[in-house]
Image (cartoon, rainbow, N blue to C red; front, side, top):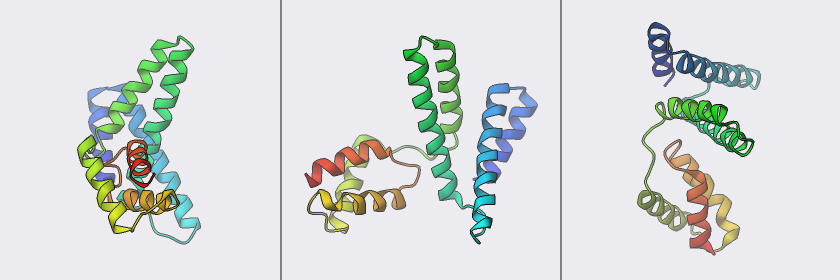
Length: 149
């Protein structure tokens, strides 16, 4: 994952794509920051699953920013956020469609013997662990809630 991001940075430098270059630099800086925090806690560098989590968080932040910019009629800034989202998404695995999310949720609810909303946390943790970066946690949460409710 790191090498893909570094290679993408080199390509962006050579092509002169400023938005992609800036976005990839932000991603790599966030990863490096997380590496430093991990070393402070006595761990090694963050793994690919952690990197997927960082990317998902960055997308979520940009979606929120784009929404706020739109509400404030700052459409050019909202568009910049959307461009960054697309750049980040290019480094994530293919997202699961609605049917795949539903099947994954069904399997996890069965595996953890989910019976009520009290088991929601166990189900969501299992989903995040099994499908890092591949599923929309918001969609999955709604499906699990429906199944347990």
